[in-house]
Amino acid sequence: MSRLRFKISMSLDGFVAGPSQSLDNPLGIGGMRLHEWIIPLEVWRASHGLDGGEINPSTPVVEESTVNIGATVMGRNMFGGYPGPWNTENPWTGWWGDNPPFHHPVFVLTRYPRESFGLDGGTTFNFVTDGIASALDQARRAAGGQDVSLAGGANVAQQYLKAGLVDEMEISLVPALLGSGERLFDGLDDDLHGLEVVRTVATPQVVHLKFARR
Amino acid sequence: MSRLRFKISMSLDGFVAGPSQSLDNPLGIGGMRLHEWIIPLEVWRASHGLDGGEINPSTPVVEESTVNIGATVMGRNMFGGYPGPWNTENPWTGWWGDNPPFHHPVFVLTRYPRESFGLDGGTTFNFVTDGIASALDQARRAAGGQDVSLAGGANVAQQYLKAGLVDEMEISLVPALLGSGERLFDGLDDDLHGLEVVRTVATPQVVHLKFARR
Image (cartoon, rainbow over all chains, first blue to last red):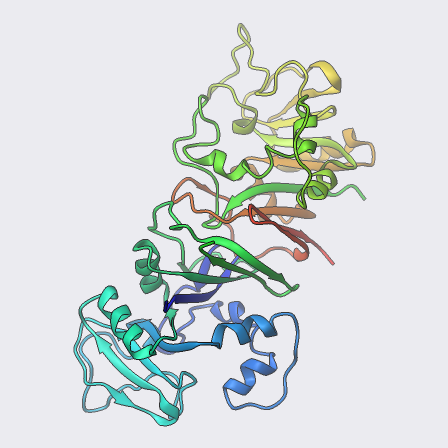
């Protein structure tokens, strides 16, 4: 069974992005604080074409998150581009350059239709206008039996969580406060749809909480 | 140095009490979910005069939290009693019966003056009307060199956290959603005042995150 797997970094006060998110600062003010634990890791650097870096208890968590993923679903804000219809004269192709780190089909939820396109390294971007269930169906088919990664952002993640469609969730809890921004668990009801903590990994920089159905 | 130590159970979505808190339901709707991990423990049952119970990885966390505490500070809501001036005809003496589990001086922050009184087992309740710094000063003096426990609720805890007066904090994170209620980290700025994660203990029911200054 192809599972929908979601991972995100969250502050102790529940924020997954800082305030004032924009094209210039997609993580919001202070949002980079949530990702400081991953940047020094060798495994992260290698996936972004960089040498060096360290190995620590977060390494196997990051490695595990990339195994057996055949497709990705993400929201329009995570993909980027100015709001509104797509500019076909000067098309936005995502934050990740010519060779994005996905190397598989990515499905972007949007209100505005757009033709699929491919970049180097096997990544294709596909645009879905008929909702989260359709995007998941298409991603599952594209994944060819492998799992689907739910990349975020918060709004799309909330929709999948609320619908009970998330099979596995890794919350990387950063022991810091952002004070404001975008909360992951906002406007959700009180139901984790059977997701329970099945594994924790703690470092001084981050505490990884893996949720799944038993 | 006498430290101010704070411990609280918090849901994954950041709530420390459910909605609609009242004298009849001081934890709010669904708030008891946050405390399900502690009720079966032998160490908790013993402190409430009950036999039996279990021992699990949460046991040393609970034991540690009670060691070397010489006084407690709490808010008016945590102490209880109808809002407004104290009813001296029919005085409220707290939720804990004739022999409260503190066995040391407790300082209750309130807007309304009231005479101190003692109950069985060494617990005294003292009422402080001139703010959090004064309550902490009085508790430190009463603690005779031991630490002071900050018992909550959320509003008083926020005041102490915001002022940077908390020296040690144990967040017992319950991997469940309440969906609404009272958030611990609300209206705070983005500053943990040097508190860092120094120890984690994980069980399927709860993940304990201990914060202190290194």
